[in-house]
Image (cartoon, rainbow, N blue to C red; front, side, top):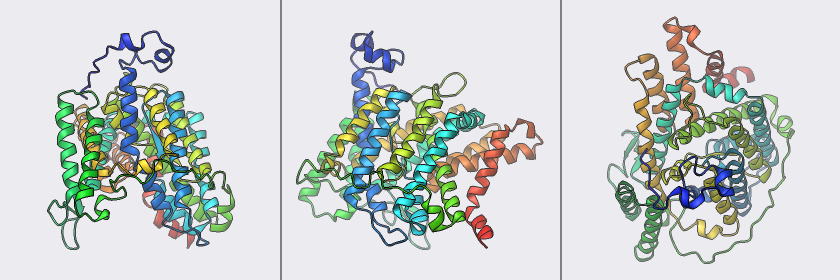
Length: 479
């Protein structure tokens, strides 16, 4: 990936300082200013989570018909993201930010809540985190990651790049949903780009590309800031349907401060869900949560760390055990706080795009999330159209990892392609990882090379087969 050159030499800025030694700034050839810039950029790219997650969880009811408070969910989302991200920076020393997982949130909202109360649902989220922590602490999670072929790990990085680019294009309105009888996706609405929000995205993307190619420090952050200002001006003078902007309407906030509401904190019931929903249903939900949380984080950690050039010569992430343990603890923090479990976000790659290489970036991002608990009105200023260009640019940069895959070897090329394709097409990192591993195992078996399949890859492939067939399996067992 192209490096952005900071005008201040690393040696003059942090050499020998306690901050430098703790975060290994000089060793990773980065600077304090670059890390701070990366942390701010990551936060801006992820700020939509503070609004999006509460909207999803607050829009459904539990088995008793109870709604969660949007204000309480907003506080829980920002607080758990902030605490988890700071913890990742201090313990893992990697530029990875965490927040309520968008792969976990739908499971919580649409698979768990209809069968149990909200405290019982949060109890399952906490149990998910405990299981993941145990798997990380025992080394099992690291063993599974290391057992996956390096080429498939590279494919995961490429797939994540396409995935976040797709998120950016869809969120900005450049890619739209097709109408009945037509193609599943189209350019904009019915094959045409429409509306001022798309103009804001186009302006931001072109500006970001120009600044980035010229290696302007803060290119991504500058573009997001200027695009936001443009969006605020356009929204003020043009007649625009607020829904056209998505979850965030760019407008001057009425106030800068908001009182945080921690009413959901510690409102959990660890085992009540098994009694209320039944052992089978609760176990299926817990299994889905664990599998989603496990592999969403695994793919993202590897892909972002690869982009940050933090992999060793064996293709592994140094200190991966601590990183994965923190990810599991973050799931617990999310459940205890009253929202969905927190996990590593692919938007962390936007900070890496600014040159972030250490946990100092995560501390900055986490600090901003914690501050957002009090400044939630400001989170409603940056529209997704201003942040989406960063996702597209970083997605393009992550695609360069495809050169590390031997496309002439079909035994690895086909599983790699399936891994890459299914992530954006199904909007799930987990689906891509699972399908790729299954294809890899089946191809090796078909070629009579079963001894080349690591036993953990075989086990995980079987688990994923059960995951993909979970509805049929639930029907058979429930019947």
